[in-house]
Image: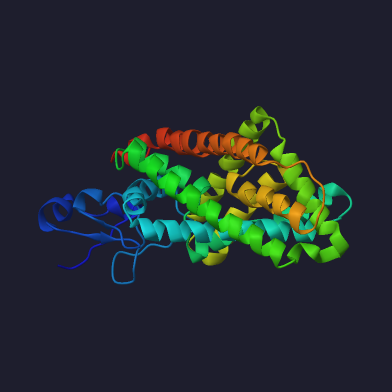
Length: 321
């Protein structure tokens, strides 16, 4: 049967006769996602052979429908695929973190160095979005399909757990390679000192500070992921995600996956280079606990839950107000 694709803007122009009587088994395809005719009101890309309309950007009501419907695709994909993509995502974020350390090392004033870090760090998330990856902080938005009854709460936390462990593996891999490949030997030991000091600060952060900074961080990270879906062009996606990530870096917020690199990197550097620091495994776990919980609240409840409530009518099939 011929494939028919509609969008929210064109839906009003399509007669009810076509939707209810002439189309019995209409399927919609968007990135390997197949949906029956009941889902015709979700946003989907227009191809040249069907109804066409130019877009400057996708509306939030369109993006949230896509997130709601893509939830089952993410949580039900094979374990091995999810885990491998999570390892890649952790490695990409760690590489962005490493690059941000290198470019800001010994830069004066410190605020300027942090701004330079903010320019480089988003490269990691760009690789996740473009090359493909499963990132814990971004997958917090799967709370949207939970609220929309597309997936269960169990499936939500199962996916987050698998992705979290994969992110940890990828981040640790880069931490080991950066140390034992002597990448940190740049700048005559100044980069080692910077890596150890960063890890020491993070490993000794008060729980409430890590929790609140984790909330603020993932609000911005999820907005970055959300905003990247609003663009059609690759350049637009990169620009859209760059600005919120730049902001979270210059503000000094806490990202759990980035900390999976920052803290172990400093711990390993203590042994490889003999640089003293106050970093313990308990301190690392305490940081990851507080920041992870904050990321979960900021991304799932505040961003995911907030946007679900804002666009609840649209998600349930009503026209936007």
